[in-house]
Amino acid sequence: MITFQTIHAEMPAIDTQAVTAWVQAVGASYGRRMGDIAYIFVDDEEILRVNRQFLQHDYYTDIITFDYSGGSLISGDLFISLDTVRTNAEGLGVAYEQELHRVIIHGILHLCGLGDKGPGERELMEAAENRALALLNR
Image (cartoon, rainbow, N blue to C red; front, side, top):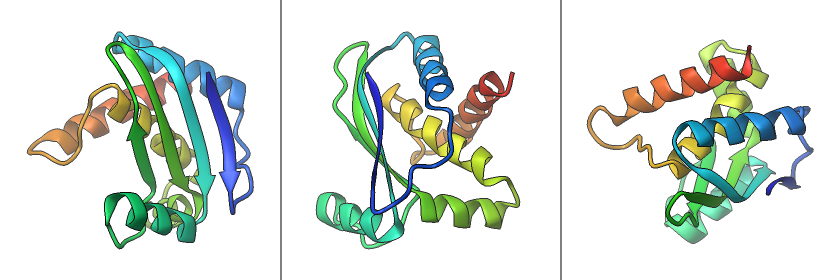
């Protein structure tokens, strides 16, 4: 089950049914089934609190993914800072909605096993994000 909730933020104007179907399709393309996925939309202060408390990182970020997956069943809590998404969209010169969708799928790709920290991983992650975004925009 995929859920959408907020902490210290307003729910973004997304089509949750379409996003749910899209997330499921992307997961299936990696041979994964959906378990419990919680999207938690937050503000910058909440993402900073989560980052400090659970990861001992003292900086803002667009997404923090807590992975509870097992085998082919993916589950997790995905905290997304809408403030940072908006700032990043402005900095990249892209639409807020496009950047939000990129971050939404970024977390799912992490749950599917893709990384973005090691050598060459960022490029593979970006390519996977672009393929997933193309599916949504059909």
